[in-house]
Image (cartoon, rainbow, N blue to C red; front, side, top):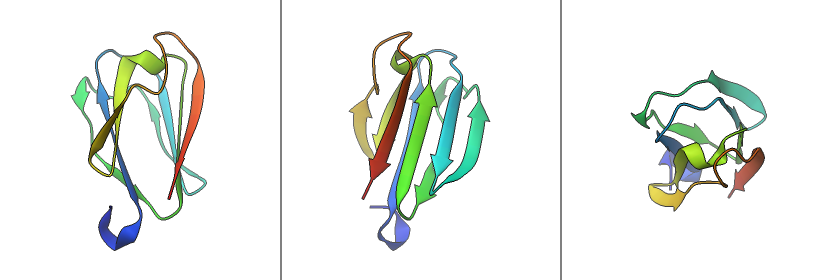
Length: 82
């Protein structure tokens, strides 16, 4: 778990794709993440990821690789909670 018992999330990008990251209701990232591992974000309650190319990256939640949130060129909005 993230420090303090919350959620920690990271994106490992394989291709360039627009992503929004919303932490506990606040937009913290919007844009094209760098290829490869990206910085982690911490949340107390929830993390939402929105993208139009869900197969472009893997998601790591609390250090566990969860894989892609969807298929290549699939538009998704995924919510991770405690």
